[in-house]
Image (cartoon, rainbow, N blue to C red; front, side):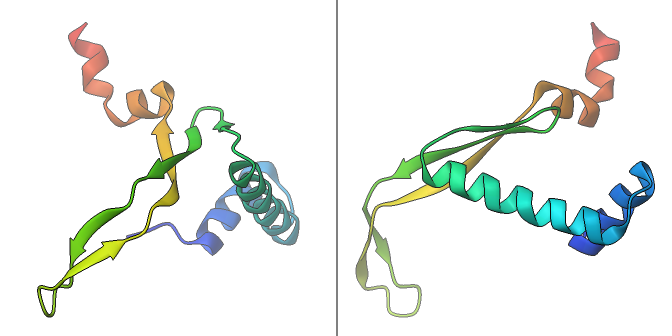
Length: 99
């Protein structure tokens, strides 16, 4: 089951003993700030979570799944997420035991 925005807001509000409205506003502002930074070509580091950066995806030829006809797919920029080592390690605790 996915963690919804409301679930995330509730968990953060409970953890820091803050009103949900304040947490919702902060989360919305975080999204806006990250979006603006990525549009400006900046990388965004979220400590303990990972890094977001923009990479270009070149134009390419694809196929229409219904007809099989070739179509041109335009080049575009996409956001890439690189997880932090701390996040990766927390998902794979057994790797630490092997060392």
